[in-house]
Structure formats: C-alpha cells, structure tokens
Length: 344
Image 1: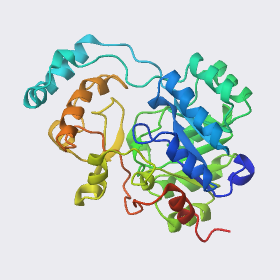
Image 2: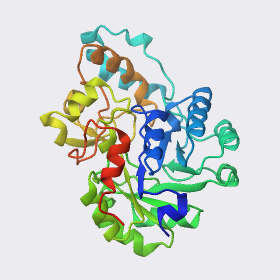
Image 3: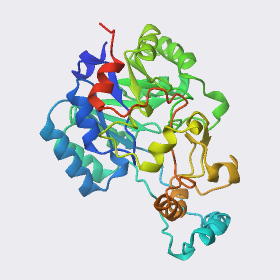
Image 4: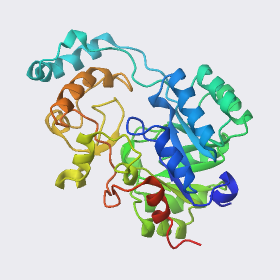
C-alpha cells in the first residue's frame, strides 16, 4: 500500500514531528505541498495543542499529530540533586540561580486529556514515539478514524507494533536526529543504520514501512523506496526552512563546520538523542548519570536560555541527524517537492 492510499497524500514524504523547532506553520506548509505535515504534540500544553490543531484544521488537508508514550518516571531526589551538582559550575559561570531552576517533567506522555483533544479534531494520522500507549488510549485514538504510526528501531519492535495495531511502521535508523524511538530494548548496539534496517523490516511485516534517518534529498528518497519503503520521514532537512522555529543558535550550528559531528547523548533529556556535539556533551561525556527521561531537561533549561541569549549553543540540544546536506533555507513546500523529485 502506498502512502497516497493510506493517508490520501500526493507525495510519499512525512515531515518528522520535531518538538522545540516547529509549530503548526511548518506542518501546514508541508501538507499544502502534498506531503504529510506533522505536529509534535509533546511540545504543547493541552490548551496550546487545541490552538495548534485548530490552525491545522482550518488550513485543510491530512496531517499527523505525534505524541510521546513513555512511562512517567518516578522522581529520584538524590539523582536529581547529583545532576544539579554536576551542573553547578555552569550555573556559577553563567550567573544562574540553581535553586530557581524548575523541577518536574518537561514532556508529558499521551493521556486522557490528549485523547479528548484528538476526539475533538479527528486528525487523519496519529503517531507515537517510544512504542504505543495503553490499549485503552490507543483504542480511543483509533476510534477517531486516524491511521496509527509508531517508530521501530529493530525488527522485533516492528513486529511488536504490527501485532499491537499500527497501520504503518517508521523504520528509524541510527542516523536519525532527535530522540531514539526504541522501547523494547535500551541496548543501542542492537540498532542499525536506515538502509540496513529498512529491508529487514519490510520483509518482516505486512503493513507499510516508512524509512527515517539520514534521508535528506531526492536520491535518498528514491533509494529508500527502491528498498521497499512506502515513503520516507524527513526531519533534519526541514530545520532551516522558513516556517521552522529553529533558533538562531541552532541554525548557525547546522550551517557550521561542526554540523557533521553528531553523537547520541542522554544529557539533555535523560534519553538517547542525536545532536550536534557541543560543550556540555564534550565535557560531561556520554555516560554521565542523569535523571530519567524527561526529568533531566529541567535542570539544563536555564543554562540553555542564558547561553543562547549570549549567542552560544553550549547547553542547547542541537538535534540533527548525520546527514545535514539537505538543510536549506527555503520554503517547506519547496523542500517537500524537491525531496519527491523524479518519483512517479
């Protein structure tokens, strides 16, 4: 089944939902070009989510609403204190009051309140990261008529998603920017690159497979489809688009010589995610203990704010995949059409 048949779109392109660097404007532009625009619901509170969805609905066309579905962590006061202690020298350097730094989770999982919003707006597609929500919540999402997607980083995860009701599976390769979507195993050694993972998942399941990770131009899209993908999900290439809300610091980093040096880090949120290597990543390293996802983020937030005000990305999650060649300061509609160039 093609993405045109599954979602009613013209181009086999899904714009990756990217919390913190976009709102409905990017999704509207992508959908308007004939691809599938996506909204990262985790970036918004319930009232703000309603506002964003109202804008998408008014614009018309199919769109995807993405939710995290992680299990809420149990706060660990000792671990949080140790994390803040590790950041103390940076607080002092930047003149940040460590005691004023917020606590609590920065991202909420799919919930009853979120399900009520879906029931009101009934989007064409609902996607999840970190597996799927509880059967009860998943049933409510499906009852709206939405097609359900989720990310798999291994063949085992793809089979699990198909068995639990996903209408299509996103094969997320290790090259992808942002958070890893793994949920059955946290062993990163079991994960692989997109073009090794994709054909294995295509052979293993019967639902359509969408390739994600390292795909930034028309040649990459064509290669993924040649390997059996029904379409592709692209994120990093959209970061410089006119409609993205990517910060000036992040935009500059994407266009700098260091943009090709990316790594997985859990320092910013408590869960592995790929971004451009910066000072915090270099100085604390890949194995420094942090609170569980998403609790690590709140202690870093005031450092990020203060440093970015000075034009520095030392403490910012500069999410990006391994292939930044497709990043261009053009309209999202133009990029979407360019990605699909040459496809029948």
